[in-house]
Image 1 (cartoon, rainbow, N blue to C red):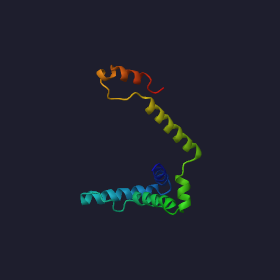
Image 2 (spheres, helix red, strand yellow; image 1 turned 90 degrees about the vertical axis):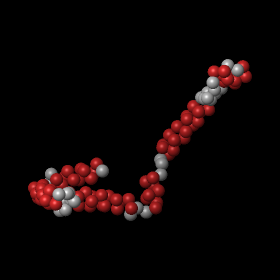
Image 3 (tube, rainbow, N blue to C red; image 1 turned 120 degrees about the horizontal axis):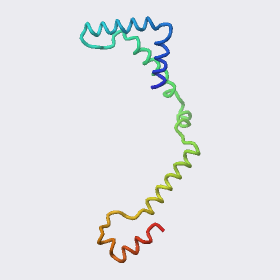
Length: 119
């Protein structure tokens, strides 16, 4: 989206700036006269639509191999995921079980089990 607005800014500040501004004004007058804006003769909408279509075509015309390469994780990303998964697993397994009330925690057997939990 940022690239689309950059392209729009480039065209609005280019040689056709005055023509585009005049077309926007005329489009606004049509909308005021009709009592609603329908973007008739809007000069900006076709610029944005063309830019989006061109960029969408880059992705929709990719071969399956190119798509796979674009969405495949790198070795570094895989390692990061594995490390985060292992860390989450360890934290979960070491965490004391929840849901015990005070009377249960004070029971000798439960207290003994919880004292060694996660070791």
